[in-house]
Length: 326
Image (cartoon, rainbow, N blue to C red; front, top):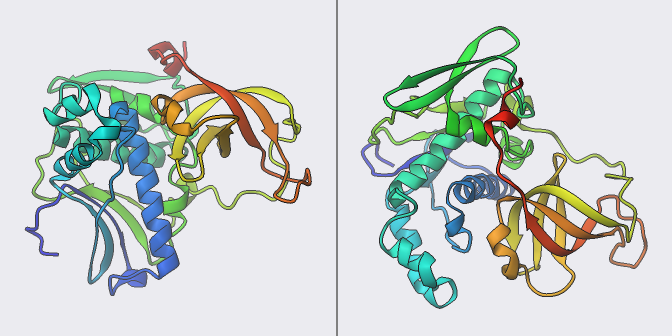
């Protein structure tokens, strides 16, 4: 890839372990799935009206790195997907997309906002050395070029000014959102996320490419799931109402991923198809249903519970009081 080739942003691994531009098949698959999960989470948080659109992220490689490039015309590609799937996704959503207008922004602005959000989450995580923090005891405020920034302190007393919109996003981020991607970070393989050098730097951007090295991996990678029984208090066939966040939907398996207390639980409708609930995808909600710990052989030994749900209820939006300690 030539430096003047047009693209919007990149996720890439650099270092001696990818000096020829390759990852093995398994690692490549893990990286692609990880990038896809992260990108879609931020996409649907920013623009829920895109939750029904299927699209692929293109991949390029070059000597010295392994890269996934977000194309400059990704909005046009999604528009084509909407048009080709118009019979399924039509109506007001298709009309809005066809007008190249999601909210008050064009397609490119939406995707730039997503990449900026991902970069800021990495910056905040590195600053705080955690993705768990949800409230901030001491904050500072300033405004630059019409953007409201909030200054947050880390344990070393250092301050980082973050656009309010991205700090709010950080307070909702699942702790394991970067798990699949950052498991590939090693001594000689660093993850970098940034914009093309051809892109204009916005006032609410981090101003630079962000990276995750082996020294920072522990902030973003939480390791393999433990072998102990997960949530032993959730007994088989118990009725539950769980508050969390839907991270994915898979129509083929008719299941959704549900982020609950820093774990992803597989949930499936007792009746019907998950497509009927897609308006709740990638949002905070309450799932009501029954715990299932039965394995494929009919034995109640499953260490990770699944939830057979009856319905999904949307959660109320957070307020500033939820984010800042009094």
